[in-house]
Length: 203
Image (cartoon, rainbow, N blue to C red; front, side):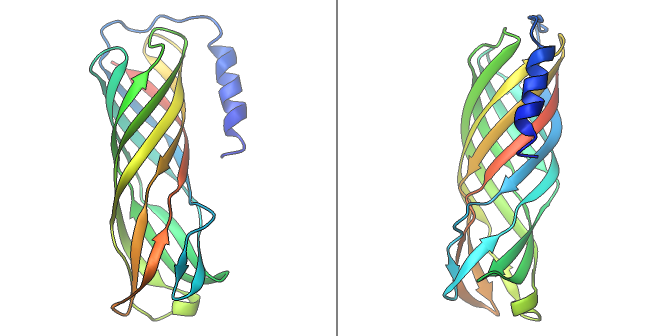
């Protein structure tokens, strides 16, 4: 999806080359799409072994309330992401997580056909269904939940008075203490980039 994102954005620019007036009284934007959670390349060490966390793609949804044409408050949610965890390149665990984000966005050109935006917010990541695999098969593995900052940037491409296409990227601070059979073995530094493409509806 990361490789296809620039092509999709270019195509959307072509369809939005003519300015389209948006609904003047719109205060809400609902978006449905998909995001790729791509963890950092360096995920730290657990029990002295290099940790690797795999990426995951899932459907996502968000709702944004526009306090003014430029400023919006947004909540992002998703279906659970699933990640494979490796230690020194060998499968060791699998976990699922929900990473909702609440943030504030600033839209630079709210009345233009193409409007860039930036934002910042707070993330809470809930880890569940964590299981030992391979090296840790049969072990009780637990990943602690995480609170962290989130940064956001993207573009809204107006398709009609109500419909839009959004391409965005986020960086989220996610770090989780990992426990094996009750003992802490280290902290996984996930800190992913999150790439997304969504269709939105203003009302």
